[in-house]
Figure 1 (tube, helix red, strand yellow):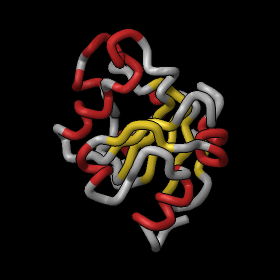
Figure 2 (cartoon, one colour):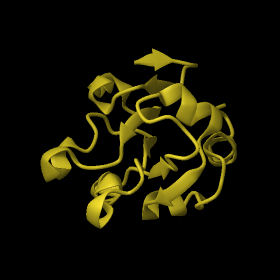
Figure 3 (cartoon, rainbow, N blue to C red):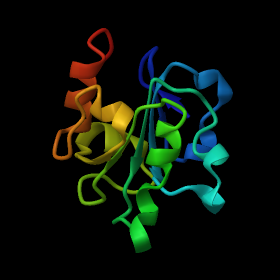
Figure 4 (cartoon, one colour):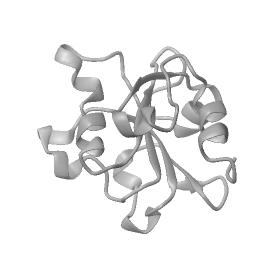
Length: 129
């Protein structure tokens, strides 16, 4: 995982997120699908926010199934459109990502489909980027 400041961590793969990333904004390049369909594997840390790539959605919306699993843990989570950021590249999601899907916890913070990820984070977490 690569840090871009004290509160934001960029991880090209969600597997690189550590328990020590608790309370941080975690931007990944990973798809937003649950690994093995297991909600316990949605994210290793209780983050302030988690972002993933929608990877084009997948069959039956499989590319965004981490979002409700994280909502159940009260973790705001979004995906960025695969057309706005490279899959597997967290820096791309951070720099050019456009939100495509949001969970209820992220919606409560004002996240909307079509918002630039970085702009929304700046509004939702004003002391951060």
